[in-house]
Image 1 (cartoon, protein in one colour):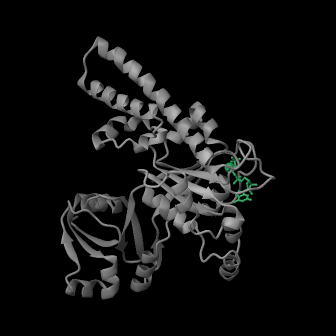
Image 2 (cartoon, protein in one colour; image 1 turned 90 degrees about the vertical axis):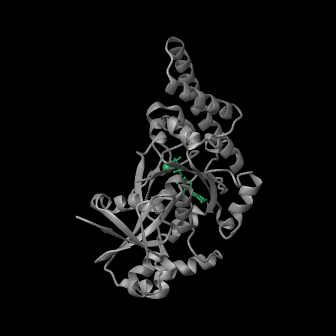
Image 3 (tube, rainbow, N blue to C red; image 1 turned 60 degrees about the vertical axis):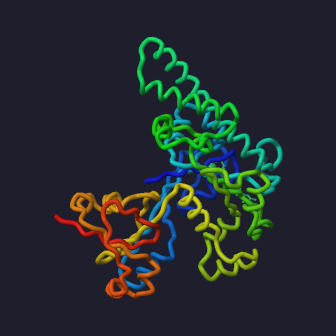
Length: 360
Ligand SMILES: Nc1nc2c(ncn2[C@@H]2O[C@H](COP(=O)(O)OP(=O)(O)OP(=O)(O)O)[C@@H](O)[C@H]2O)c(=O)[nH]1
Ligand SMILES: [Mg+2]
């Protein structure tokens, strides 16, 4: 399961956001060091709902992402051994950035300054990585003087590239390393290499500003950065929203000039940032979304569903979601030649409905 860490400076709204995401009870609010919270979040998908309706299945199984709420400031976490190890095990970071004004909650650095906070945190991640790189480079150079070793030489070469990148204050996620280089440094679990989703936590008066994230990304130079995304949410409005019934919620949203909760957008943004897509299966009693990385083959996708399906893989029967819905069922989709038989190397696409033919 993929894990996204909710990180940021102290008191920026991380736990509030975590609770909205997971609707988990219990809280880690206030100062101090509550234990780290982990929650599993379903990825909303209207396509899946439609399939359940169409095939009248009992159960819907959504794709899921795991979110981890981290306590306090990431700058402190990155500086302590155990805590920084926990950060390193995450697949991506969701950096909650305070953009709301509230005199009752002191802002780190004395004033609310999202761009400044982003730069500070980024710098800390890079320094932490640089320390690791330098230590390893020193070690490798020492060892290589004693004995030649081609694979260690290769590692040294990549680490030197990383060092040059970090020295220029560029996070490693923007280093455009090749797959082989990425593989060589994977074990270091560098913090600045992790995909980054910036979440602007807006004040109530900005809640309805639909282009807040876009404008901020532009102004802060975050647009079109590799493995980087920006979205905005109003934690306070969403927290209240989560407590309301559907009819109350609609009214409440309207009072802020909003149409829908920003939570599903936030979940989808994390999904996309991780390069994830979904394919669907229609079983006897359930419709299910499965999470795969873009570029996954039919054989690997079969393995996600069941190891037997992978072992006995014969063919994948694949139909696009839109085609299946338009056809109204598998039989008609087949009659329209929209149901394709694909081999094990076929690359599964987002939104495809797949039936695996397998032996055994
Ligand atoms: N005005 C306003 N207050 C907020 C918002 N989001 C969170 N808060 C308040 O800010 C305080 C801190 O919120 P938390 O969610 O606990 O923040 P945190 O980042 O988890 O805090 P630490 O884990 O202690 O670093 C709480 O009093 C929240 O009610 C918001 O969007 N607007
Ligand atoms: Mg917290």
